[in-house]
Figure 1: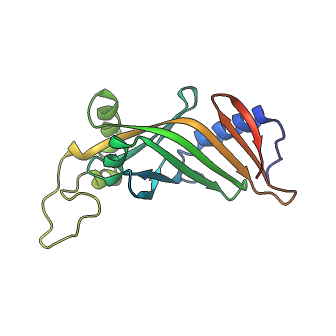
Figure 2 (figure 1 turned 90 degrees about the vertical axis):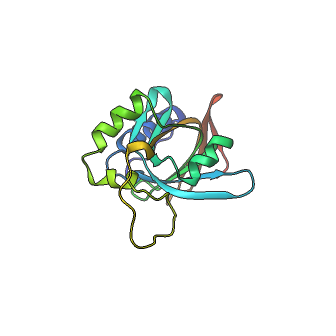
Figure 3 (figure 1 turned 120 degrees about the horizontal axis):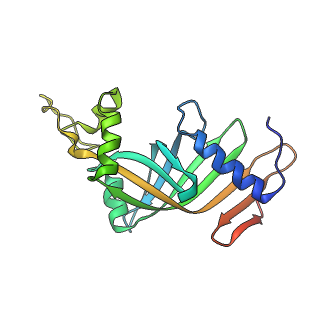
Length: 181
Protein backbone atom coordinates (compact mmCIF):
# COMPACT_ATOMS: atom_id res chain seq x y z
CA UNK A 1 0.00 0.00 0.00
CA UNK A 2 1.17 3.53 -0.70
CA UNK A 3 2.33 5.85 2.07
CA UNK A 4 -0.63 7.58 3.70
CA UNK A 5 -0.90 11.32 3.09
CA UNK A 6 -1.98 13.65 5.92
CA UNK A 7 -1.90 17.16 4.43
CA UNK A 8 -4.98 18.36 2.50
CA UNK A 9 -2.90 20.12 -0.16
CA UNK A 10 -0.79 16.98 -0.66
CA UNK A 11 -3.93 14.85 -0.95
CA UNK A 12 -5.44 17.17 -3.55
CA UNK A 13 -2.18 17.17 -5.52
CA UNK A 14 -2.06 13.36 -5.34
CA UNK A 15 -5.67 13.11 -6.53
CA UNK A 16 -4.94 15.27 -9.59
CA UNK A 17 -1.72 13.34 -10.20
CA UNK A 18 -3.67 10.06 -10.18
CA UNK A 19 -6.33 11.56 -12.45
CA UNK A 20 -3.58 12.55 -14.87
CA UNK A 21 -2.36 8.95 -14.92
CA UNK A 22 -5.91 7.58 -15.34
CA UNK A 23 -5.87 7.97 -19.13
CA UNK A 24 -3.71 4.82 -19.11
CA UNK A 25 -5.97 1.78 -19.50
CA UNK A 26 -4.13 -0.04 -16.68
CA UNK A 27 -5.03 2.64 -14.10
CA UNK A 28 -7.84 1.94 -11.61
CA UNK A 29 -9.54 5.24 -12.49
CA UNK A 30 -9.45 4.74 -16.27
CA UNK A 31 -13.11 3.72 -16.29
CA UNK A 32 -15.50 5.54 -14.00
CA UNK A 33 -19.24 5.80 -13.53
CA UNK A 34 -20.91 9.03 -14.66
CA UNK A 35 -24.31 9.76 -13.13
CA UNK A 36 -26.65 12.29 -14.75
CA UNK A 37 -30.36 13.04 -14.71
CA UNK A 38 -33.03 14.03 -17.19
CA UNK A 39 -34.80 15.92 -14.40
CA UNK A 40 -37.04 12.96 -13.56
CA UNK A 41 -34.81 9.90 -13.43
CA UNK A 42 -31.15 9.45 -12.66
CA UNK A 43 -28.98 7.25 -14.86
CA UNK A 44 -25.41 6.03 -14.53
CA UNK A 45 -23.00 4.50 -17.00
CA UNK A 46 -19.33 3.69 -17.37
CA UNK A 47 -17.15 6.20 -19.19
CA UNK A 48 -13.49 6.05 -20.19
CA UNK A 49 -11.23 8.94 -19.18
CA UNK A 50 -9.47 10.07 -22.36
CA UNK A 51 -7.80 13.28 -21.21
CA UNK A 52 -7.26 15.16 -17.97
CA UNK A 53 -6.41 18.85 -17.81
CA UNK A 54 -5.48 19.57 -14.15
CA UNK A 55 -4.87 23.30 -14.67
CA UNK A 56 -8.37 23.69 -16.12
CA UNK A 57 -9.85 21.21 -13.61
CA UNK A 58 -11.38 19.30 -16.50
CA UNK A 59 -11.82 15.71 -17.59
CA UNK A 60 -12.61 14.60 -21.14
CA UNK A 61 -14.51 11.53 -22.31
CA UNK A 62 -15.81 10.56 -25.73
CA UNK A 63 -19.38 9.55 -26.49
CA UNK A 64 -21.92 8.98 -29.23
CA UNK A 65 -23.85 12.21 -29.75
CA UNK A 66 -27.09 10.18 -29.82
CA UNK A 67 -26.48 8.73 -26.36
CA UNK A 68 -29.11 9.43 -23.66
CA UNK A 69 -26.39 10.98 -21.48
CA UNK A 70 -25.95 13.71 -24.10
CA UNK A 71 -29.65 14.54 -23.91
CA UNK A 72 -29.35 14.58 -20.12
CA UNK A 73 -26.48 17.04 -19.99
CA UNK A 74 -28.02 19.31 -22.60
CA UNK A 75 -30.92 19.98 -20.20
CA UNK A 76 -29.24 19.23 -16.84
CA UNK A 77 -25.47 19.77 -17.22
CA UNK A 78 -24.55 18.71 -13.68
CA UNK A 79 -23.28 15.20 -12.97
CA UNK A 80 -21.14 13.10 -10.67
CA UNK A 81 -18.24 10.96 -11.85
CA UNK A 82 -17.41 8.16 -9.39
CA UNK A 83 -13.98 6.51 -9.47
CA UNK A 84 -12.61 3.69 -7.30
CA UNK A 85 -8.95 2.78 -6.84
CA UNK A 86 -8.58 -0.60 -5.15
CA UNK A 87 -4.79 -0.22 -5.05
CA UNK A 88 -5.00 3.03 -3.06
CA UNK A 89 -8.30 2.40 -1.27
CA UNK A 90 -9.59 5.71 -2.65
CA UNK A 91 -13.07 6.57 -3.81
CA UNK A 92 -13.38 9.84 -5.67
CA UNK A 93 -16.65 11.57 -6.47
CA UNK A 94 -16.10 14.42 -8.89
CA UNK A 95 -19.02 16.84 -9.01
CA UNK A 96 -18.91 18.13 -12.56
CA UNK A 97 -20.49 20.54 -15.00
CA UNK A 98 -20.67 18.80 -18.38
CA UNK A 99 -20.58 20.27 -21.87
CA UNK A 100 -20.79 18.38 -25.17
CA UNK A 101 -19.12 19.31 -28.44
CA UNK A 102 -19.92 17.60 -31.74
CA UNK A 103 -17.95 19.84 -34.11
CA UNK A 104 -15.00 22.17 -34.20
CA UNK A 105 -11.25 21.79 -34.05
CA UNK A 106 -11.17 20.09 -30.63
CA UNK A 107 -13.56 17.37 -31.81
CA UNK A 108 -11.98 16.92 -35.24
CA UNK A 109 -8.44 16.64 -33.86
CA UNK A 110 -9.50 13.93 -31.41
CA UNK A 111 -11.43 12.06 -34.10
CA UNK A 112 -8.33 12.16 -36.34
CA UNK A 113 -6.38 10.31 -33.61
CA UNK A 114 -9.18 7.83 -32.94
CA UNK A 115 -10.51 7.05 -36.41
CA UNK A 116 -7.93 4.39 -37.26
CA UNK A 117 -8.41 2.47 -34.01
CA UNK A 118 -10.94 -0.26 -33.19
CA UNK A 119 -12.65 2.18 -30.78
CA UNK A 120 -13.76 4.29 -33.75
CA UNK A 121 -16.32 1.60 -34.62
CA UNK A 122 -18.34 2.62 -31.56
CA UNK A 123 -19.05 6.01 -33.14
CA UNK A 124 -19.72 4.72 -36.65
CA UNK A 125 -22.78 2.66 -35.81
CA UNK A 126 -25.86 3.67 -37.79
CA UNK A 127 -27.93 2.86 -34.68
CA UNK A 128 -28.05 5.02 -31.56
CA UNK A 129 -26.68 3.46 -28.36
CA UNK A 130 -29.21 1.12 -26.77
CA UNK A 131 -31.13 0.51 -30.01
CA UNK A 132 -32.53 -2.93 -30.66
CA UNK A 133 -30.54 -4.61 -33.43
CA UNK A 134 -32.59 -6.00 -36.30
CA UNK A 135 -31.37 -7.99 -39.26
CA UNK A 136 -29.97 -6.99 -41.64
CA UNK A 137 -27.72 -4.62 -39.73
CA UNK A 138 -27.69 -1.20 -41.45
CA UNK A 139 -24.56 0.16 -43.12
CA UNK A 140 -21.93 1.91 -41.02
CA UNK A 141 -22.47 5.58 -40.30
CA UNK A 142 -20.07 8.49 -40.37
CA UNK A 143 -18.03 10.47 -37.87
CA UNK A 144 -21.07 12.66 -37.29
CA UNK A 145 -21.92 10.73 -34.12
CA UNK A 146 -18.58 11.27 -32.38
CA UNK A 147 -18.80 13.76 -29.52
CA UNK A 148 -16.49 15.01 -26.83
CA UNK A 149 -17.76 15.57 -23.29
CA UNK A 150 -15.80 17.98 -21.13
CA UNK A 151 -16.45 17.73 -17.42
CA UNK A 152 -15.38 20.79 -15.46
CA UNK A 153 -14.71 19.65 -11.92
CA UNK A 154 -16.47 21.87 -9.38
CA UNK A 155 -15.69 19.72 -6.34
CA UNK A 156 -13.80 16.55 -5.46
CA UNK A 157 -15.12 14.40 -2.63
CA UNK A 158 -12.27 12.06 -1.64
CA UNK A 159 -12.72 9.04 0.63
CA UNK A 160 -9.88 6.83 1.80
CA UNK A 161 -10.67 3.35 3.11
CA UNK A 162 -7.69 2.30 5.23
CA UNK A 163 -6.96 -0.26 7.99
CA UNK A 164 -6.03 2.63 10.32
CA UNK A 165 -9.40 4.30 9.72
CA UNK A 166 -11.39 6.00 6.99
CA UNK A 167 -10.80 9.63 6.06
CA UNK A 168 -12.73 11.97 3.85
CA UNK A 169 -12.03 15.41 2.40
CA UNK A 170 -13.78 17.84 0.08
CA UNK A 171 -11.89 20.04 -2.36
CA UNK A 172 -13.94 22.85 -3.87
CA UNK A 173 -13.82 26.60 -4.61
CA UNK A 174 -13.38 27.25 -0.87
CA UNK A 175 -10.28 25.02 -0.65
CA UNK A 176 -9.81 21.69 1.10
CA UNK A 177 -11.84 20.61 4.13
CA UNK A 178 -11.88 17.46 6.23
CA UNK A 179 -15.28 15.77 6.39
CA UNK A 180 -16.68 13.03 8.59
CA UNK A 181 -16.29 9.79 6.62
